[in-house]
Length: 162
Image (cartoon, one colour):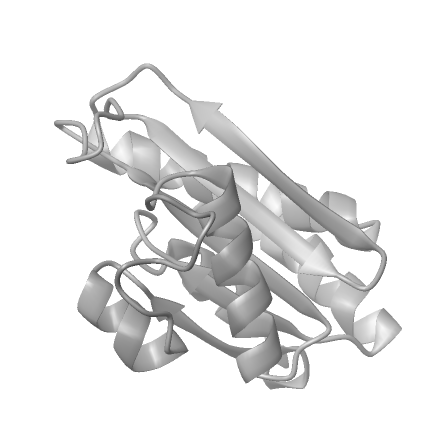
C-alpha cells in the first residue's frame, strides 16, 4: 500500500476540491485501488463505491453485464472490457468518474492466453475516456497487484489533473 497511498492522497484531495466522485470496478487488483482511495479521511465525499469484479457471476450480479459479453467485446482482460467496466460502474453509481481494471496477476496467465503481469485499465468521465494496457513481465502476484493499482491511480490522476 505504501506506493499507492501518496497517489490516493493527491487524488482524494483533487476530487474533494472539485466536488467530484469516483466509482471503481476492479478485478485483478483485488480491491487495492478502492482500499487506497478509502484510506483517505473524508473519502465518503468522493468515493461512491467499488467492487471486485473477479468472475462472470460478479459481473452479472453487481454490474448487470451479461455473459456472453455484449458485442463487439469478445472477452475480459482487454481495453474495451476495461472501458465497459468503467462506463458501467460510473453509470450505476452515478459518479463523475469511472475506473475499470481487468487482468492476470499470476503466477500463471489467464484462460484467454494473457501472461501473468497483464492488465487493462480504463478511466472515463466527462471529456475524458482512456484505456491502457500494462505488461509487467513478472509472475509475482503481489507485485503485479501493486503495480496494476499504482498504474490505475496514475491514470486516474491524469484524468482529474491531480
